[in-house]
Length: 603
Image (cartoon, rainbow, N blue to C red; front, side, top):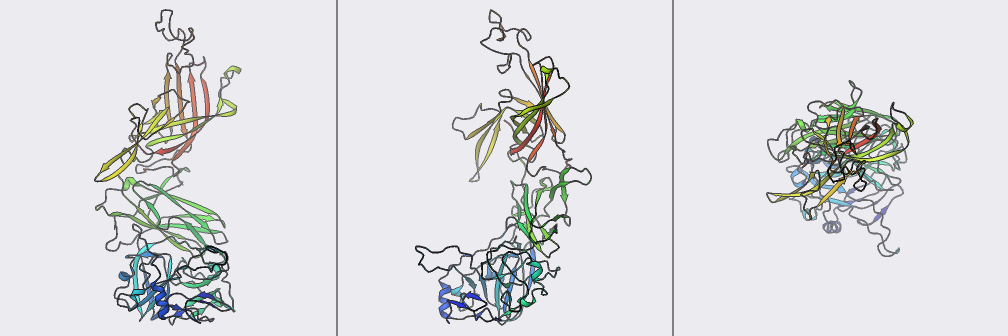
C-alpha cells in the first residue's frame, strides 16, 4: 500500500493524512510518514485555517508533552495564535490538525464522477525544519484537537480565551476529539456519552470504538475500558461514529463561540443551556474572574458588573439582581429541557477606562452533575450614555392596547366597565426622555442623521414629534396612531415602577372633537354672523385621562441602568372620557409596549 490512498481494515477505515502514514491494526491507527510524495502533496494544500481572538477573558493551560506523539485538546484559543510564537524554544518537531469536515457533495457534473475529498490534515513545521516549506497550519484555536510531535519531554504553558465548544462529527468515521469535561468529575466515557446520538462507546472487547495516541505514534484501543476509564480533560481521543452527530457533552451551550460580548451599544445578552445528558440534571452557572491578559492583549479594567433577571427572594417580583464574582445561578433541567440565561451589564458601574484598548473581562463556568465544564468568556466595552444612545428606560416605546371592557351607560350601568363581545386594538406610542420624563404621543418621526468625525461616518436616528422641519429628501419614517388627537404630545406623570398617567383635553372647537362639524350649522361653533360661539353653546370640550399600570413593577436600585431583558413592559390600560356623556365613559384593557429606539431626546 502507498500513502495517499484509501486503506481498509475490518475495524478501521481511514484515509492517510499528509505527512502521516496510517498502519492499520487494532493497536495502531496512525504513525508518522516521511514520504516525499506526501510532502509535495502537503505543499499544494492551502492554509485554510486561521484562529481568531476574542477581546479578553483569559485562562491558563499547561500540557506535559512527552517525547514523541501527543494528542491534546485545546479548550481556548491561545495568545498569540501563531504557532511560531507559541512554540519558541520548545523541542517541537511538528504539529498536525485533522481538518476533514463533512461533505454532502455526491458528484460535481455526473454521477460517474469520483468524489473529491477535502483537506484532511494541516501541518506546521518549525522555522529551522527542512520541511518548513510544507507548512499549511499557522495558527491554533480553541475547541480543537492537535497531534504534537516532540523531540524530547517538555512542558507547554499557554494563556488563551476559552471557546464555547461546538462540533459536527464526521459520520461513520474516526474523529480526533477532546471533551469539555470537569477535571474533578472523573467521568467515564460511557457516563459522558450515554445520551450521544450515533456514538456508541459502550465497553467492547472486540475494540474499534475508542483509541488513544501513544508517544510512539501507535494507537491503543481502549474500547474495552470505556466504563471505567476517566476522560482526560486535556487529551484528544480517536472516537468512531455510527452516523451523524453534533454531540458536545451532557450540557450543550448555545452561544456565540467567542462568548457573551457587550459592545458599546449592547447592554443585554443571553445564552441557552440544553440538558443533553438523557437524565435530569442540575446545571450551575458561576461567575469567576479572568486572569491577567498577556502582553499585547486588550487590558483588563475589572470584572464585568453583571446583573441577572429573576425572582427576588425579598420582593417575589421579577427584577434585576447583581451577580457578583463567585455568585451562582442554578436550575434543575429535565432531559431535553432548555434554560435561557439572560444577563445585563450594569453600565452605571462602568467609568471611562484608563486606556482606549481596554475593557471589563470575566468568565462564566457552566457545570452539571454529569461531569461537564464549559467556560464562557464575558467582555464589556465602555459606553457613555448620550442623547442618541440612552440607557433604559429612555427612548421610543411602541405597542398596542387591546380594550376588553367598557361601562354600559345605555343600560344604566354606571358601576364599572363590563366585558365586551370583542377586543378593540389601538396603537400606543410613548417616549421617555433621558431626564425620565414620559410623553404620550400621537405620532413621531424618525429621521436618519449622519455625522462625520475624524474621517469616520456615524449614523443615528433623531426623533421628532411631527414632520415639521423634516427635509423632503430626508430618510425618515413616521409612526402614528389614529386613537389619539392629531399631534398629541402630552406630558405623563408617575414612573414605570408604578404607573404613568396622562390627561389631555380635546377642545370644543378642535377639528377632531366628535361634536364639531363644519357643515352642520348646529355644530360648527359659529353664530349666524360667522363669529365663534363660546363653549357650551353648541359643543363641549372632552377631557381624557389615560393610565398605564405596570404588571409587577420591579424595585430598581440606584445603580440599575436596565430593566426587562425583552425591553418590553405590559399591564393594565385605563381610558376615561369626560364630557362625551353626562357620566364618564371608562374603558379598560391590556397594553404592551416595547422600546424600539434608544434616542432619549424628542425634538
